[in-house]
Length: 583
View 1: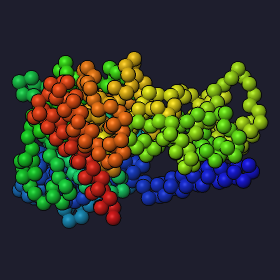
View 2: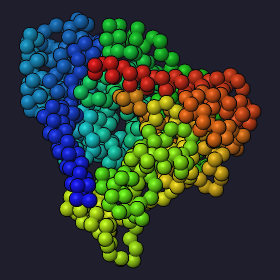
View 3: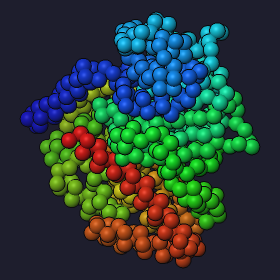
View 4: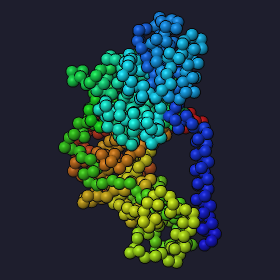
């Protein structure tokens, strides 16, 4: 047992060293990322300025100018339009909070341009500058605002930023990334009819904290163009980015002239910059925005497809998964290395009576169901599928093998971790229950829901589903359809790696039949999926559930499949492109 404890300690120590090493490397190599600063290429800044700046008399603001690349591009654009010499400085204004960066911007403007750069670049907090009573409004805003989490943005700058959002009618929270108030304040600094060209995270399309911003933009502009790229703009950032081109600024929504949102895709950044903006945007088709919390991911679809999905969600033929079940996160142990064990560890440590079956990874869920035999195979393969489950029992003091293991955990300072330190006793993992089914949190192909017949719970890498009285088998069986798959691609969010992620509230919004149909039985679906024949399951349920039971036409079913495949293939192609780019 001593050797096993030693191995356990080494395992934890190596992970902590790795964590610290990675943190150190992150601090050394990714200081730009920590302060939210990534510089846009000169080709892309020139392209954005060529779209945004259309007259020599226009004034241009860059709210977080960094080393001045956008300001240089704006100056060059004014020269293209016929304004020469130092007079261009009167049309430009850059704000930069970091003095060294502001000095770089002044230097870049002065070199070869003859600018009095001090008149162009001001070292200031953008939000403090925005609140000045003598602040002017601008015709154009260009830039690449910093991507900084709420908790990482220092005071008093954070409070100023959030106050501006509130003043503009938005309600920020602790999830709000600081790029959001940058966009709000920048838009509010525009003259009527003005334009804004920004490089933003693709989170704009999908995350809940940007929902209000999406409505704000469609209220404040007559037209919004979004350009998404399958190639990462900033490779080190590992952040999917898009271009926001907002035109026809206005003080409020005009009911007679609703905003049109257009989304254009490109394979690479070079494909964008080698064409003039009108040519890039020419292929987009305007989509009418619904002023609610719906995500803009759906704007990758055609106008007809968007209308179809909206109509289907509002119809009496569909309902949400939440009608049948609730979805919640898996078990949060506070230290999986301590609480999640292999069968060999359980046996050698003598902890058999203190563990329950566990599904620790989505890779352990292969088909449409997991039963006791499936779990037992994982345990026999010495996978980490045992959860140390020690609910407090009337203050009973642990004894024997359990006491020795808990003491070892304390020697390794497991009890001092945040999650463990705030519960009593520290080793009692909360919210341990056996769900009716598991819901994938991270999805590569299909949003699978897996029937739980193994009596197992799951870690927080997987969601747990509990039914509200219906038959779990029928609910799971009806989830294997193009209807549920298409809605998952719209309700979830995807990042640079091509994985679709569903939070519990998003999973509960997945579309299901309003009345459950005679879907292919789970056992049959399970066998086919394990054999790599998911398409067979979906086609069978296409006939049984969507057409025969719900009454959808063949054309409507074909559109659902097209929507799912279009959205899925788009994110998967970004995953492949990202791997290729990183070599």
